Image (cartoon, rainbow, N blue to C red):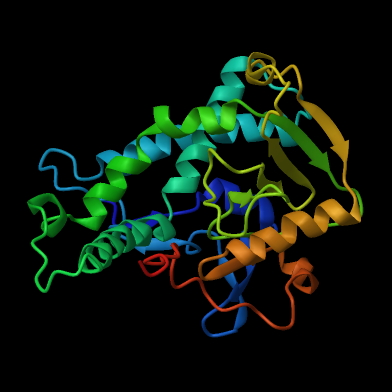
Length: 288
């Protein structure tokens, strides 16, 4: 039985590694910087194992199949320099990105936070004792997380139905993290507005140190059908602004680890942000 599971695929991390499969790593909690093999980076024990007697590795095996298909698309984009993608290749990459967004430890922690927030919300109703529904009392964060991350039909279109801009950098370099799919809110969005894959103005994903994928939501007059068929997809020349946009969002969105090519340590700021300890913000609202 497989026990060590990558929450960020090894084939992806290898894109940021040197020829010896070594990554540069910055750990947010300890503020330490070191090198680590891609075989050990983002590995957690039994993270996707489920209680199935016949095949407890069923989820991990499914992830491996999806990763194999995605790796082939990565090669087509990064090695063969093919863009835009054909429809089925676009669907493979959208599925991979939707899964990558939801498969991380951050999303499992969010499941537990939703339960805790629900309990707190019930307590604000003024009752001395809160009787929780059985589903809430017995909720297992791991099982709920695994079920939700496999709901590809819900999340996939949030990636597929966008304009995909492939940003190629010649001078600037990109880094990534243990949560590599980054969401950017619209600049005019209220500060307290929720941010998810459906509401994000832009979704950023660094594919390699020199290539980033920028997925832009349709505007009011845009035809979603055109976006879904890749008719609005294009190649952009990277700029200092875009490199900063990718890298700052990768750093801000990291849960615990920032990953980069060993020669790109200067991309990591001297003062590291704290690790993300919560995924959701909650307020009981104004007093009545």
